[in-house]
Amino acid sequence: MLDLLNQYSLNFFFKWEKTNGKSLYFVINREPKQGSLPMDVSLTPSVLKMKTLEQCREIKFPAEVRLVPSSLRGLQYISGDGIHMRLLVQADLNKKLVTALNQSLQAQKCYVFHCQTCGEIIVKERKLLRVLPLPSENWNALVEEWCCHPDPFANKPLHPGENDCFIGDTHLLVNVRSDSCIPGPEIAQAETHQLSESHLESKPKANTKIICKRCKAMLGETDSSGTTKFYITEIIIQPSGRDFDMIPRSQFVQSVIAQCLVELSSARSTFRFTVQGHDGKTYILVWLLNSDSLLIESLRNSESIQKFSLFEGMESLDSNNIGIRNAVKVLFHPCIKNRNIELSSSWENDIGVHSLVLPSQTCLELLLILLRSNHSLPPSLQYMNSFQVAFLKM
Image: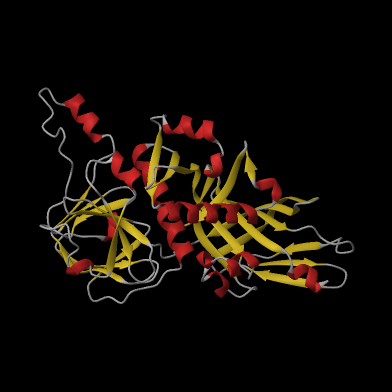
C-alpha cells in the first residue's frame, strides 16, 4: 500500500480570490488501485496526512505555506482523475526570479554577454553608454497619426550606435561592429552562417545568424549595418567580474516568457499572443489567463525528464520535497504540422493579438514545456473551451 501512495503525483494550484487568503485547489492525481480506498485525509497547518487501513503517508508543505484546515471544502474522489479538495491557505513567497533585461541593464555600466545554454562568452566587457526601450512594433504608423507634417522618421530604421543597447519585447539590439560586416574580436566566440536564399529574397539586405561556437545554439542575427539582434531567451547578460550562474534551460525559458507575458499584458492590455519563429512560422497561440498564481508540486524523476535534456535540473529535488513557485496560467493551441490553421490566421490578423518572435528551436522548446505542464495536470483540468491548459513558472 505504501508503494501505491508513493505513486501519487501531487499537484497544487493557488488562485486569488476576494477573501483575505488564497484558495488552494489540491488534487492527488492518479487512479487508485483496488483496495486502496477508503482513505482518510487529515490536515494540520503544515501537514497533509493520507491514511488507509494498512499504511499512512504525511506530506509536509513548504514553510512559506500555511493551511487553514477548517476551510476544507469539496473533498471528493473523481474516477479517472483522483482526489480533489479545496481550502484556504496563507502563503508568503519571496523567490528570486530570473531578472528581466529591462530591469537589470543600466547605462554607464560594463557587462558580459553569455550564451544561456552553455555559458560561453559572446561579448566581452562592453560598456553600455545608453540603454533604451524600443517602441512598439507599429510605432511608425502611430507617428503619422500624430505628426502634422511629413513623417521625419519615414524609412529610417532604429539602429543603435556604438555602445548603445535598445531593448524590445523578445530581443535587444546592440552595435558590436561599428565599421565592418566581419565579426569583430568581441564576438570571436560566435560563428556566422548565411540564411537561406528564400529568406534573403524577403529582405533587401543579407542577414547572418549568430551561432554559439560551443553549443551551436542560435543566439540572434546580424545585418549589414552592424546591428546585432540577440534574443532574450538565448543570452544572459551579467555585470563584469561576476561569475556566470548556470540556470537550467527549462527554468530560464519559462521564467523569461512568463515575465514577458505579464509585462506586455499590463503595459498594453493584451492577453493573446502568437509565438512565432524567426522563420516567420507561427508555432503556438497563447492566451494569458491568470498572472498571479502559485504552483506547488511534488517533483519526481520521470521518463520525460530523463529523455529530454531540456528538463535538466528538475530531478535534483528529493521525491519527498515539495517545490513552490510563482506561475502564470495560460491556455494554448499548438500550430505545428498544420494544426489550428484557421484560428492562427485569425489571430495573426487581429490587432488585439501581440506576436512574440523567438528562434524556431526555442518555440519548439516552449511548446514542449507547455505540453509537459498540461500532461502533469489531472484530466479534468487539462482543457478549457478546447484550449489546453498549462502553467509557466516564473
